[in-house]
Length: 401
Image (cartoon, rainbow, N blue to C red; front, top):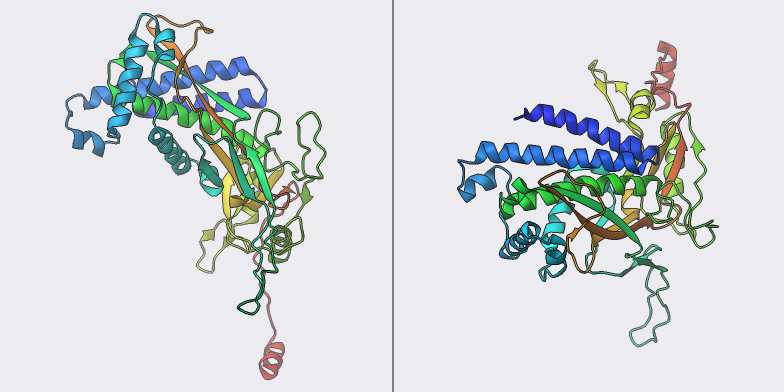
């Protein structure tokens, strides 16, 4: 039995391998790394089972992080386990009448937003069962005043955007050993949720940051709008704005760009986020936002306006994204069937089978002015400016005051 810390270190290395595979566009390396991840999660859960096998009491297990299932969830997992144990799992899963409960996906979303700040910062929604959604692409308009019996003369003309939620698909493989099937519904639920959480985030982060729009979401770094030329389904990159400082004048000018919609209407700037590569954060953004207080201690992430700084390996080097987090919409959910499918397209180890589950959805910025791409290659460290006045200047200043 491996130590929990060792398993966590292995998981970190595997996640880095997955990110490298995405960066190198190597699906085989990604599939190999993802299988390692699933084995790591399995081993971690089996270790927890071994440590808690004497604690069968429901309240004790709940206090140790094992979710207690609803009757619908229990029925679903019991049916899935029986189908997976059958001699013909593919047919058994095909004939399975129960579907994955919506509450399972809700818990996956809760895990995602709690563990990954980028998803908590954007407009992330469970769209299970929906095919299309409509988003308001304009700001709130004023109604018109008039006499009580006057005819209605003002029509709200806010623009709406229709988004097809079924165009994009995230697939997650679930390598399941027979030992997992013997643990029961509660642990099967834990395993499925952990796999979906890791698989979804790795796919979502790439799409949210730099998705091309072709068979994937449209990223924050892309131009959007009716007047944008899309070539082969791929949206063009935004031009990076070069900055050398994050002082109030520079930062205020950037936020002013976010405060105006593409149609020229003003809007309130809230939920500002800055997304940056971890390496650039420590070599550029942290020095550019860290000052020494009068008490002699350093204070970091000091920006002229409330901003949440988020690190993401998907942001290119020397670039940063500044924008209104809630102006990025990401909707995701299961297919209408909500079923786990059996796959016979992979070679399996003995006593192990691979299953497939699908998530459908789409994401894109609400408008083109919601996010800016910054060139931070020449960003300078922050300097606390102190002005020294002579006695004569101080006296003149006090007299004028």
